Amino acid sequence: MTSGGRGDQEKGTRLLLASLGDPAAENICRHLLRLYPFQKLGKAYRHGDYVLLPSEEDPLRMKSLPLPASEVLVLSRHASTSGIPTLSVHVPGEPAEGRLGVAKPETVGSILRSLQLVKEEMDLPHRVCLEATHHGPTGLSVPVTFVEIGSEKKEWTREEAGEAVAKAVLSPPGECLRAVGVGGPHYAPRHTEAVLKTKCWVGHLLPKYAPLTQDLLREAVLKTQGKVGLILSDEEGLNSEQKKVVGEASRKLGITKLTVRQSLSQKV
Image (cartoon, one colour):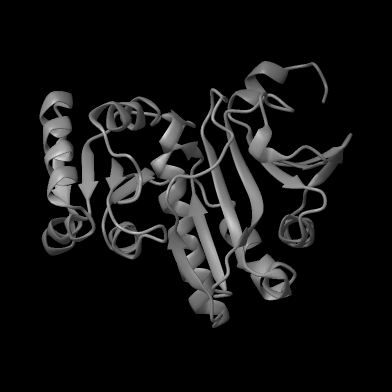
């Protein structure tokens, strides 16, 4: 990169990371370069505010940014024994250890909605969903969002899936009511529905199997970029003790708790 105006230019840079050796990341990367006028810039490619960087570094263990950026979008594979064709979005974190990355609900929601639209336009069989917060990296100071193709090898290299993610991942962050999601299973069907149908968009999503504590909920709020307006709770996916913890955290943090069912019925 040239040094002239570099600081201002990189202030709004959205870094797309594609791990070499990850077949899904390579698939998405190939379609990004085919669909959009990215210009080669050293080892990276630039298109407007986006920089696409094929990298040998494992993004899950990333401790620092390979290039200055205001946000990171990780293109990745998702592995599951179910084998269900999936296009998913999630933010990183290790709830059991109390370590969370920085989340940006505006990015999570806009990409999820774009994936759903592209899936319908391309008539793909894939499930489009949010995933609960899981794995690293957790030490970066900017928001990180994973956009993934799942759930097995034949899907990672499927051309239509790579094209769908390439079309959706450049969606600009949208306006929303920022929320921290709690409850439900890993693939969060009810939170996914809420993000697709309302303006309540989650970044961090702490599922029913996570060690839900007031401290963890506070950390999820602190590790969300911008002011959090809601704790969006899947009441059907929480036990009575977890509901109590969420209620107390909502009161102490001064953040409204809304159930997914309420958000859908009120069309927030």
